[in-house]
Length: 325
Ligand SMILES: [Ca+2]
Image (cartoon, rainbow, N blue to C red; front, side, top):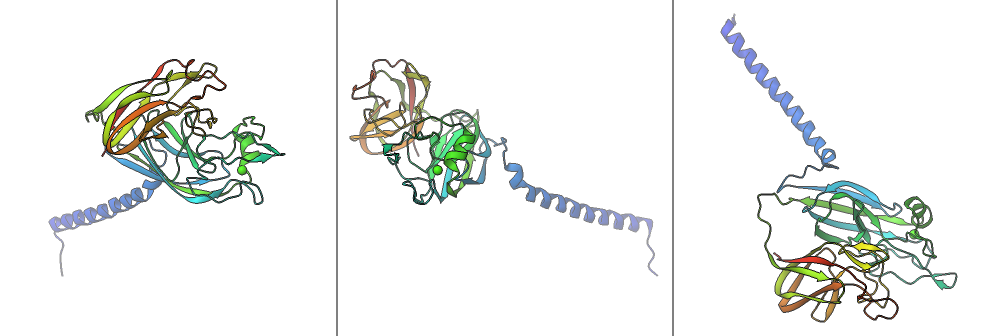
């Protein structure tokens, strides 16, 4: 008969313990792996050079949807969206299914025979996907968006539907939900990705041009560039003495026809190049096929028809132009 010596018994028990230990660790590991998606949600622990991504459904009936994603200054934020929404009920003049880029403009709608005075979060496009970081100004996201975060906070997403009554009286979120968002249909599926915030030891990309944009003049020459460049603008300036300081994204309400770029966010930063005028806001990547003069300036009343144009503006924003990849 086989007889276990003390030595053999000890060896056998050690092996058995090691084996059971492995199983226990294995179970723990599987559980941790399973938990990862929910533990990433809302995480602020984005490591330097690391990244996290979140898939979020933005219901068109919801005024704002919290993504639970928190971003910090200097984080790289990328958002991709798909799906279709309709911000009006059937038979309404705005009854149309659109993707995350929305209508491409804000259509003129009539209320009791008069043009409605609806206000929107951004001037860009009816029904488009919009975002907001913390209590910052809403901005257009669309189907494909990327930025370097200038002011951190929780990222909220929504659909660009009216947030006022037809007389232009702005509604709070619960009234907007009840009066304006309740007839909405559809949703966007959104992938939010936060990539490697710049670590302190990593050298910052060197600016190839930098300076200020005085807001009391239509255009400031920023430089002459070729290839891919990134334009970053920050700071606060007075563009309407009645409304206080405004950042590079402007007021987020559609500018009237008398402004340099009508229907784009009033008082936002614009760029002029190749005979075109486009919104820059706080961040924009541009590509120039040949050496091109780049001018920057605020979206204000260029025609001087009604207001004071640029003459009552005070202060300046600061800009940096970086080499793009
Ligand atoms: Ca609606």
